Length: 344
Image 1 (cartoon, rainbow, N blue to C red):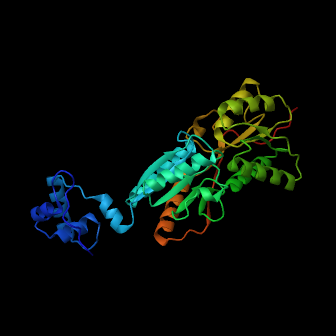
Image 2 (spheres, helix red, strand yellow):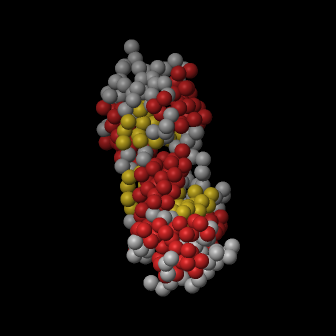
Image 3 (cartoon, rainbow, N blue to C red):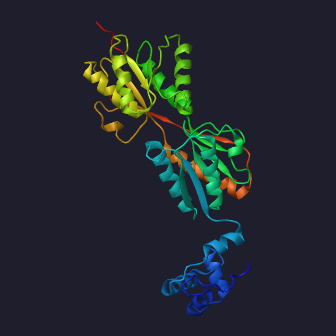
C-alpha cells in the first residue's frame, strides 16, 4: 500500500508528528487511518492514542479521492415526518454506520421533474458513493434520465423503473392477509378505506382487496377514499357508519383507521361487535387504541436495512442492473376484529 504523504490536518499537526509520538513509521499511521487490517492491535491503539493526544484528524477527503470512495450515501425523501420514512431512515442510517458510511439527507418539497433531477445533481456534487430514494406518491421516477447513470441508485418503498434495484414491503401479501382474516370471520364482504390514487402502495393494497373479493364471489363495495390522514379516515368512517350493511372495513393505513374508529364510535357502531376494522402499518400507537387495532405490520426498519445493503452491493460490485426484493408483512390480530354478527 502506498503511504500517505506527510500532511497536516489544518492545525499544524502532521502524520509525521503522529508517527514520531507513537514510535512507528508514517506508513503504519497511514494504514491505521485507512482501516487496514495489517496492523497489530497494540500498534493500532498506540497510533490512535497519539492521534487523540495531538488532536490529529486524518484528511478524509484526500483519502477518498485516492480510493475513489467517500464512504457516504445520499438519501432523497419527500416527507421526513411520516412514520414509515422515519423508521426506514433510522434503520438505513444504522446499517450505513455499521459499515462505516455516513448519510446525506436531501428532502424534496416539490414533485416536479426538474426538482427531483436537481436533488440527484446535488447529491452527485456532494460526491456520494450511492443514492437511495425513498419513493412515495410525491416522487415520480418514470423518466429514467433523472437518475444518474454512473451512480448506484436503489429505490425504496415502491415499484421502480426496471433498470434499477428496488425494495418494497409485500403490499399485496399484507392486503391478502387482512381481507382473508375478515372473510374468515364470516363477514359477507369487506369495505375499504383506500389511500390516494397516486400512491403505488395504496394501489397495490386496493388491487389485492378487489381481487380477493371477486375470487370469493363477494360483492365489491365502492372504495371510500382518504389521503392517509386520520381526518380523512374520520370522514370515510362517517360515510361507512351510515350504511347498516357494513360489518368489516379494511383501512389502507393505521392513521385513517384511527379516524374510522372514532367515527364508528360516535355513530354508535361498536367495534368489533358491529363492525370489524383492520389497518395497515402497525404504527406504535396501534396496540394502545381502544379497542387495540388489528393491523398488517409493515417492517419499515427491515425495508430500510435491506435497501442500504442492496445499495452497498451495487457500490461494491459496480453492477447497475435492476432487481427487486420484497420484505414480508405480518397480520397482527388484536381486539378490533371479531366474528360476523348479523343485525337482528
